[in-house]
Image 1 (cartoon, helix red, strand yellow):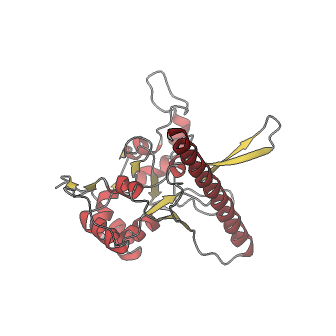
Image 2 (cartoon, rainbow, N blue to C red; image 1 turned 90 degrees about the vertical axis):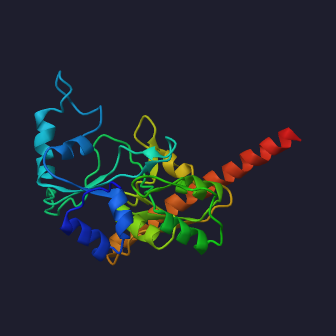
Image 3 (cartoon, rainbow, N blue to C red; image 1 turned 135 degrees about the vertical axis):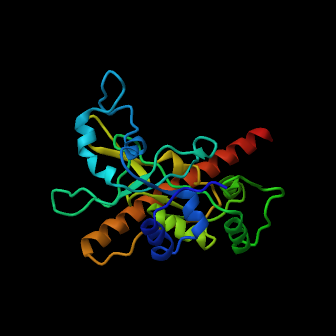
Length: 267
């Protein structure tokens, strides 16, 4: 069995600090050290490159802090038959500092559209999720050499399992460890995109394609963002929840309408 290498401090952060199942942490998180971190984070073809295809030195310098190490998390791609997703999240050991003096705790691939975290699960976690929703497991579940129970998210889709949308990969992993079907976005406004007209005015918002797949007519969606205490931040979180909730409702109603229309045509 091959599992991702995790440094002791990263393992303690994830398992002890965030109550993530040990095997689930090893399936989804890995420790990176040195220049290899560039290969995970600087993936966009939009980044300026040299004739040899290397990312230009200015960008390497901007992200030089990641070579001091950190952990990486990437999940499965709902838009590519649940294959491994190239996009993900890196938490550097030595974060860079913003102009306001605060550290940037998490880095995501620059110049790359926001995706979601649909993490790998073990058979035991799949069993716990099935028990939570009084469902039986599919026959002949395949468990690969790493211990991943293959097909979990397809089952979640087919069975219309309730989904929790949370903020950050660690929280999704912690919820999955308790038998909840949880997916994560990297930030409170990362679940939708803003569409503007030629004058820069916002004309509409739309769910990112990853989340739109889950907006089926009878699925319960729970939005579970971080608890905040500052009034300004509370207002921002509430607004993001309202925006995301409305977009899910619109998408689900449209999905139901399309199915009804197709059913009438068949008759």
